[in-house]
Length: 182
Length: 437
Ligand SMILES: Cc1cc2nc3c(=O)[nH]c(=O)nc-3n(C[C@H](O)[C@H](O)[C@H](O)COP(=O)(O)O)c2cc1C
Ligand code: FES
Image (cartoon, rainbow over all chains, first blue to last red; front, side, top):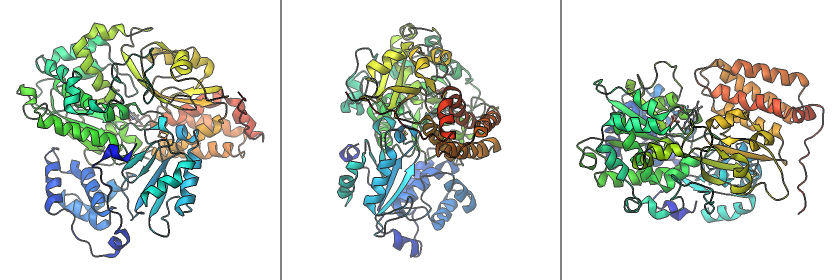
C-alpha cells in the first residue's frame, strides 16, 4: 500500500522511548485523551469492553504498554492491574517493552514462505543492523520481527512498519524502503 | 474481480465489482453505485421477512463453516426483552485468506450496510465489527464509513428515519488468530483474553455480554444487500452444480501462481479452469503440485483432486478437502511439502490459546517432529507418532484450532508420503528445476 492511501494515519512517536522507560510516569488519560476514552465507553454495556481500545490508546501515546500504564487503565476501567496484565500478555500487538522507532513485522507464514519471505527477513536484518529477530538496532531505530499471516497473502511479502502496511516487498526493495524511513 | 488484475470475463462480480474503484469508498460514491437502497428497503420490511428471504436464497456462512445464514438469524428470538447483538467477524487471519480485507478497504459502506441489515433482521440495536489489529487500512476506511453513515443519519438512533436504532461500532483486535473463532471473538470484545468458550450455550442464547448474539463473516453480511434487492431466486440461480450451494463466492488466491488476487465466481465453477485460466496457471516453467483450497486448516488436495473439483461446499468435500474460507494456497514443484506443512504446524502452535492440553501440547509436539523431519533428522516412527498425535488432537478440544493443525499433517502424510520418506531416508529435498522456456 502506498503511504498516501492512508493519509491521516499517524504513526506513534517512538522517539522518546528510551527516555520514557526511565522517567517518572505521567498520566495518559487526561484532557482530550480522557474524552476519547469516555466516548469509547458509551459504545459498550460494560467498562471492561473498553479495555482493548484503552490499551491501544495507551500504546499510541507512549509507544508501548508499561506496568504503570496498565495500572492507570485498570483504575479507569475498575479492573485489577493483574487482570489487565493477563489480557495484555495474551495479544501479540501490545509492546510490553519499548521498541525501535520503526517496528518492522515481516510475514513468514507458509503462503508468504513459499514466495520467498525468508529472504525478505534476512534483507531487513542485514540492512537495519539489528542482526537478530526481536532485537533493536544499536541506534534505537529498528526492531524486526517475524509475524504470522497478515491477511494479505496475495501480495507476498507484506510488511508492516508501525501502522503502515506495505505490500509485495522483495529483498531488492528493502534498502529503498528503509531509506525512505530515514 | 481478479483484483489487483483486470476482471476475467468468466467471473461474476456481485460483491467485488468495485474493487480498485476508490470513489466507491465514500458515502456519495457508494450511493451513486446504488448503496443503501437495500437498507432502506429492509427497514420497510418486517424482520422475519428479511430472515425468510435470506433463508430462501440459500446463503451460507462465508467464514469457514458454511452454516445457513437465514437459519442462524432465525435462532434470534424476537421479543425476549433482552438486548440482541450482531458481531461481524473481520478477524481474517486464516493463512491464505485476504478477501475480507479487499471488501473492507474498497467497499467499506457495503459492510456498514450489511451490518445494519443484519442487525435489524435479528432485532439488534448494536453491531460490532471486530477487525484484526494488523488491518490498518481496512480499519481506517471502515472508521471513515461509519463516521459518514452516522453523520448522514443512515445509522444511529433513527436509522434512515425509520425510528429504529442501529449502532455500528468498529472494534480493533490486538493480534490473535484465535479471536476469529466466534466465542473467542466475543470474549475478546468483552475485554478478556481471547479464549474460546465451551458450547452450549450457543451464541444465540448467551453470546457477547451474556446476551443473544449472531456472528457473521464480512462476506456473508455484505451478500445480504444484493439478495434483498434482487431476490432469493436470482441468488439461488447462481449455482452450477449442487443446489445446496448458491450465489457467488470470493476466493483469495496466493502462493506459487501467476496471478494471485481475489476472484469471484458462482458456486460450482470448475476449479481446473479457475486455476489455469483465471489465475493464469503456474509460474514460468513450473508445475502445480498441490492446492490448499480453503485456508491452512483444510486438507491438502493433490492436483488430480483439485482438477476434478467443482467449487462449492459439496464439491471440495467430494474431492478430499473443504471450501473453508476460500483462501486458495497454490504450491508448485519447487516446494517441499514437508517444509510447507511444518510451517503451517508452527503457525498453529504459535496461535494456540493453550487452554486445552491436546492443542497446547499437540501443536508444539507436531511442529517439533515436522521440523525434525524437514531438517533430515526424522525417523520412520515419527510418521506414526504424528498420526497418533493428530488423532489425539481431533474432536477433543473446546474449539477446532487443534483439529486444524492435525488436518494438513494427516492429509500431507497420506497424499505426499514419499516426500516425508525421502527426507527420512537421508535424501535432501531437491526442487524440480524450472524448465527453460
Ligand atoms: C480457529 C478459528 C478461526 C476462525 N477465524 C475466522 C475468521 O478469521 N473469520 C471468520 O469469518 N470466521 C472465522 N472462523 C469461523 C467462526 O468461528 C464463525 O464460524 C464464523 O465467523 C461465522 O460466520 P458465518 O456464518 O457468516 O460464516 C474461525 C473459526 C475457528 C475455529
Ligand atoms: S501468509 Fe503472509 S500474509 Fe498471509
